[in-house]
Image (cartoon, rainbow, N blue to C red; front, side, top):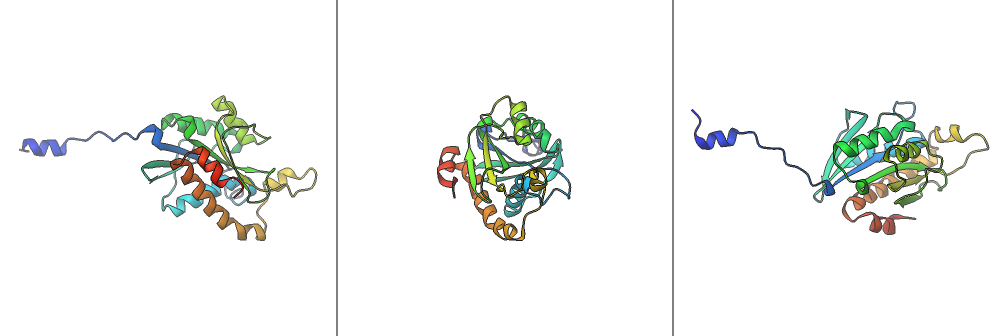
Length: 208
């Protein structure tokens, strides 16, 4: 028969709750499937993949997306790659914000931007969707344009009528060589967002 202390030790302990204000959802936008993986439109996927590898964590398939998480300076950083395809990204974002009880101000969406030169970084707290279907659906699902986004420049080096081919095209060899350094900067930006806040992150990284 177990002693009183033995029964105490064997008693299932309640799961420790994480303070919602210390949880952050980082969403990389992209399209699922190997044919899209290395395209310009999938820079969000590539960015969170880089950070996951850097932190030595793996993604697992869950409802409406692939999920990975790690702890950094007492913060819990959750990485999400929606599996809904780009045009329905908002459904996945809304679900995981609710499931993990993460406040809207702790959301950061990583997306490509045609209006920025290649590799340029802009962090914003609100704004229009700029014709980006992923951002458009997030805005629709969250019922607001006031959410943080990390825009990664892919430039607009395409001829008239070739925009779709361009964003769904793969990086040039010259761009491929420069991406690792840009990913390193992006990883530091994401950690700064979770620890120093959005305003300091904007001041530090915009234009970097």
